[in-house]
Image (tube, rainbow, N blue to C red; front, side, top):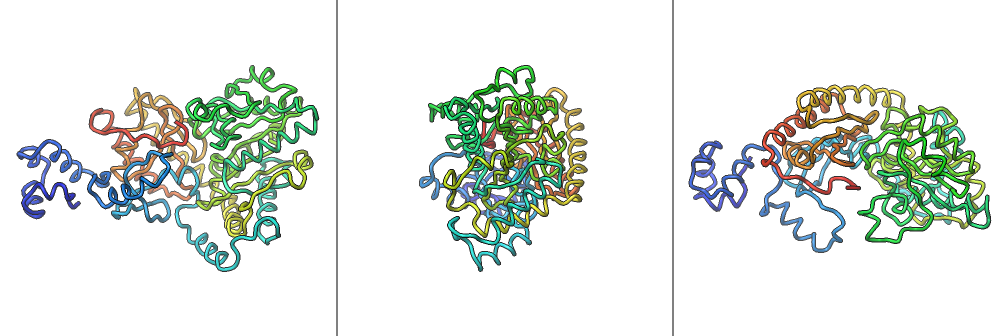
Length: 478
C-alpha cells in the first residue's frame, strides 16, 4: 500500500523511501522520529489502516464537519460505495460488513432488485401525501398482516400504520396505547406506560421516555410523565409493575442496543397474561430483531398465542436502507383510533411502500429463514473457538439467528478498531458486548473470512493491550 504524504515528505522521494524502508525492521532501525516510524509500520502492516490526518478522507471530513450538529462520533473511513456484504471507502479500500447498517440491510447493500424498483417508482410517483390514496400503502399493509399471521406471529394482526422510522413507529404505538387507556378510563388515570431496563426504543421524546438510560434522558429531562421501568426477565416483579393504571407495556423480545438480551418465554407469557388482566396494550418492539433476523419473520413467532402482542413496531430491515417504519395493530387497538388521532406527511409514500412490499415478501421466504439458522450455527462455532482461546475475555454468547452478542470482560472498542483496520466492520452494544447483525444473505465463506479477521484482531488487542486505540460511539446507546 502506498505510503501517505506525510511520510513521503520526510523522505527524499517516494520510491527511495519505499525501497530503503521496505520492512518494519528497516523502519525501526532508521533515524526517523518515533511517530513517523509508527505511521510507517501501521501503513505497511495493515490492509485497511484508518486514514491519517492528511489523507483525502480527512480533508473531506474536516471540510464538512463544521456544518454538522455533533450528535455522532464516527471513525475516519468515509464510505461511498457498497454491494452485497461489502463496503468501500473513498480511498477504495474494501470492508466486510457485519453491521448491515445496524440490522437494516438484511438483503445486503445496493440490492439489484431494490435498485430497479426504486428507479421505476421514482420515475412514476414518489409522493402524494396521505390526503390521497396510492396503490402501495394499502398493499404493504395487507401484506404485513397476511405474512405476520402466516408466519405464526401476532395472530390478531389486522391493520397497519405506515410511517418513516423506528422511533416514529414506537411513538405511534405509545400514542395508540394512551388512546386505549383513555377509552377504558375517561378520567385519564389509566395512562402509565411500562418499559424495561437496558431497552432502547428511540430518541424522540416519547420513545426516549421509554428508554431508561440516564445518559440520554438527563439532557432533555423532564421526560414525559407516566413512564415506569421494570427489570427484564423478572417474572416476580410483573404484578406490581403492571397495574390498573397501566395503559401499555413496550418490550423488545430481544434487546439489541441493550446487549442482545433475550426475553424468556416464561417471562413474556406472564407479561402478556398480566396485560390482559389489567387491560393494558402489549407492544413488541421488533425494530431490530424482527423481519427474519431470528430465522422467523418475527422474534415472537415461536411463542404460544397467549403471549402474542397487541402491537408490533417495525422499521430497519423493512426498507433495507430506505427510511420506512410500520406499526401493526389488532382490532382492539384499531377500533379506538379515529380520523385525526394520528398522521404523517411522508409516511406511506408510494416509493417507500413499494420497496418495502418487495422486501417483506423476500424476508418472509422460508428458505432465507432456514439459511439464517444455519448461519447462526456457523457463527456460534467460531464464537466457541474464540471463547476457548480467550477464556478470561469472552464470558458469554447470546442471541438468536443473526442477532448475536459476544460478551467480553474488557472494553471491546479496541477490537472494533483492530477489526476495521483489517477490513471487518463490527459494532458494540450494551456493556462490553460485540454485536453481530450482518446481512441475512451473508455467505458461509464471508462468515469464515470475517471471523478469521475478528480472531486476529482480538489476538492483537489482548496480547498487546497498548497497541490499538478504541473506537467510541459504535452503538446507538452506550
